[in-house]
Length: 357
Ligand code: ADP
Ligand code: CIR
Image 1: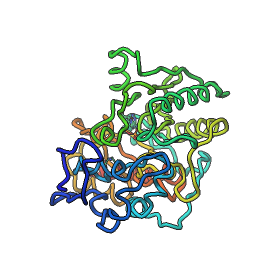
Image 2: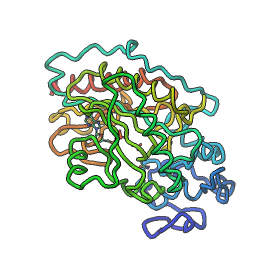
Image 3: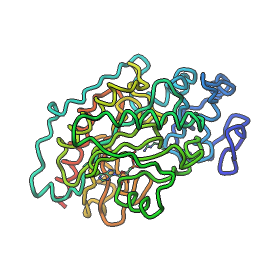
Image 4: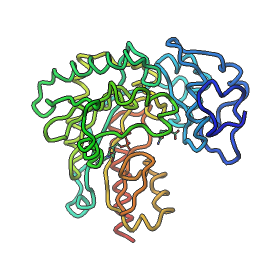
């Protein structure tokens, strides 16, 4: 079947998908005929099918990756395929172990000079988590999604640290104006894009979704977006240490009351294979107007330091005023503190390049 926008559902991927010339996704690169024949009729233990796992990249042939997992078990049942994606994206081999270290005290990120810090608008670090006893978002039933939300909300009532205490706001019933403002101010997620739509993450939107945050909106938890929890610490300015410290206290506490999907090879289990491991994305919004006019040099620095350049309105958004979202690209096989370091080192190099232009 020639894949593409005419596909309505996963079952429509009847035969081995033929991707149009120029398709760059990891799906198109690694889905061999042999793997297709081996997995095409397989389901994971929650009934999520291999065709559902690859549908997003079949429908959206401009995907970077092109696949999602329906559960922790998807990574095992569909291992001949997912192992290749994980190895390619994370350079994490089949027998590699994942290690965790969220100790903020072990960061080697001296504060930015006032001149450098002035280029940085804000700093944010998030980690993704999913409950061990449930399928992941793409395979959750409506009832399970509500159960997950209720469990998470109960867990979020147990913080002892004052700066982590907050309130949960369900998306259902939230007025449009509040929602739009929270999104524009970078606190709230939008409805999933066509990539998430195609893997089932927008089903019954907005039911079962919501956001928890403290009064200052420096600590937030997204519930039932791409992952069941996105634990987020953010603030204006460049104090990476404060942001990481708050995140690590929060994540450690939640884990004392909730069991997360995790194993020693893949680390924390997430619906998108790019997030496996730490599920951590540390980012700054930073003004780099000169590098913006030298995209080749800009991208070369990003590649060298394993960081990703995004627009400031979320993934797949564009930047128009020379402000960018710079974040660690790797997530698996290295600890959280090392990935925050990746981002810091990349940002340092970009600041130097900007000043030299
Ligand atoms: P993710 O949730 O996977 O980290 P997105 O790129 O979709 O990724 O970003 C989610 C939201 O977080 C967006 O509104 C984005 O603008 C905001 N955001 C990301 N990094 C920062 C930052 N350093 N400062 C302020 N907002 C940020
Ligand atoms: C894609 O394949 O392009 C989408 N499913 C999003 C993948 C995750 N994002 C990323 O690596 N930047």
